[in-house]
Image (tube, rainbow, N blue to C red):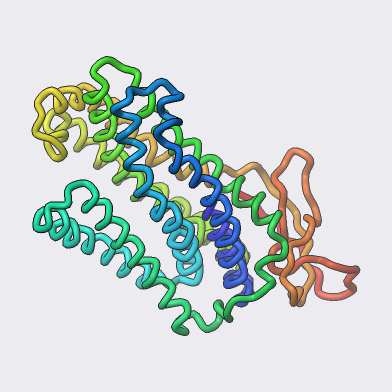
Length: 364
C-alpha cells in the first residue's frame, strides 16, 4: 500500500508542489496504520487460526510464538516504506542508502551479542531484528523532523485527515498486485504444512523463499527507483526521459535476474548448505533448485512489466496556476474502459479563461 506514497509524492515533486509531499506522507501513515492495526488480530490469534486450518499442533504453536514478535515489524513497515518513498521522490537517495546499510550491519552485531554471547536463542535473534529495524525508522524521522527536508516537511497538519478515501483507493490498487505475489508464496509455505514430513517440507520451502526474497528485494529496489523517476519526468512532460529510464531499468533488472538464475542452476545442489547442515533438507532444496532458478529469472522481468503496463493514451486538461489547496479532485477526462486519473497537483475547480494546457500522456 505504500506504493501510493511514491506515486503521490513523485507527482507532487515533479509539479513543484513540495508542501503536498509532507501531507501525502501523513495521509499514508494514517491509512497504513489503520490497516496494520486490523492485521494485528491475525498475529495475535495465529495459533488457533493455524489449528483451524488443520496444521499440526507443533507447527501452530511455533507459528503463534513467532507471530507476536512480528507485530512491531508490522508497524515498522508502516513508517519505513512510506518514508523511503517520500525521500526517494525528492531524490534524497543517499540518506536512505546509509540508513539501510546501518540496518543491515546492526542486526549482525546484535544477533552475535544476544544469541551467542547472552545465549538468548530465537527470542534474542528476533529482538535483535526489532531493535535494528526500528533504529532505521528513528533515523529517518530524525532526518525529516530535524530540518533536512525544509521544502517538503512543514510539520503535522490537519489537512492530512482530508481526502482520505482517494488515498485508500490508490493505496489498495497500487499494492494489490504486489500483495497477490507475496501472498502466493505465503500460501505455498502454508500448504507445505499439509505434506508428509512437515518439518522438512516447511524448512525447504522457507529456504527457497528466502533465496527468492533476496533477489526480489533487488527487483523491488529498481521498481521503486523507476516509479519515482517516471512520476517526476511525467510531470515535467519529458516523455523521452521516461522511455529511456524504463528501458534502462528493465535491462538492468533482467541482467541481474539472469545472473542469479545461473547461480541457482550451477550451485543448486549446494545452496541449501548456506542455511542448514541437514543432508535430507539440503537434498529436498536441491530438487527444487531448477524451479527456484526460473522463478527468479521470470520475476526480475515480470515485476517491472506489471507496473509499466501501458494501456494507451489519455488526454487531461490542467489549469494554471496550481490550485493552492492541493485537494484531490474528480478526473477531468476519463475513458470508460481506462484507469481513473486524478490531477493531483493542479486540478480544475472552476471555469478558467487563462493558461489551459492539454497533456497527452501514456499512463502506467
